[in-house]
Length: 288
Ligand SMILES: [Zn+2]
Image (tube, rainbow, N blue to C red; front, top):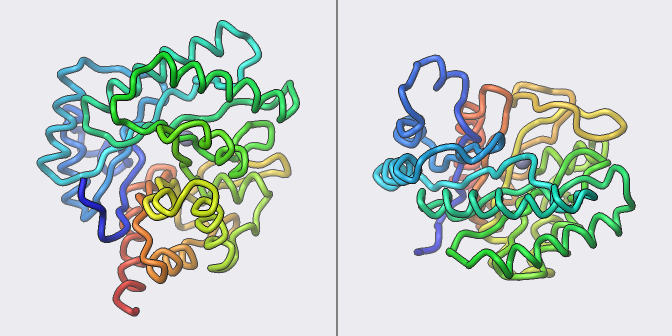
């Protein structure tokens, strides 16, 4: 794969505006995303990997035709740190299914939630997650698709940036997925105020996992409402209360010549907001 020259932007799943057009099949999504002026699309399998091999291959063919970069969000019920062994090891099946679907689509990464830390200590949760991933890496053959581990937004979830980085050290098949809205919500807001706050994330990943991991980071960005326990719900870019702000992130990406994939998870306006991000980013690239 030739390295990307710029950051790329796209929606997580289908926006309200896409759904309002009553498309017959998700196979039509990549072309629609392209027509919007976007570059990437995160296929949603959060509620299960549903679809025939032919369907996933058709989505992949449509994305290749449109020049859209694909990723796949794996089922939410994957539980790397689950205390019920049956449920925890059941996660292996969903990871396998996600990797298979991603390979059929030509997606480069699946996005996995690291799990819960609600009833056990974070250390115990990390041990369980490490064990589940070790087994997954042993049992599931490498098909070229990266297993992305997402930073999470609720304080009773595993998945701070440090925890995700620690788990990613298990194998080059693992990579961090940085959800900036989640990190901000986990820390009860005001976590990303300026460029240095964002730069710190890329610097840490570069130092711990290598320059390439930071350069081509897969990211989620949306404004997210929080309580003192972290994430409450996803908002849209129009929010002015909860943050985090996109502007300083755009400046860091442009100034440092980083080439992340930024997936927007706004509530309903993810395509429009991804385009707003892209336009802000383009202004900074031009201004350099
Ligand atoms: Zn997620």
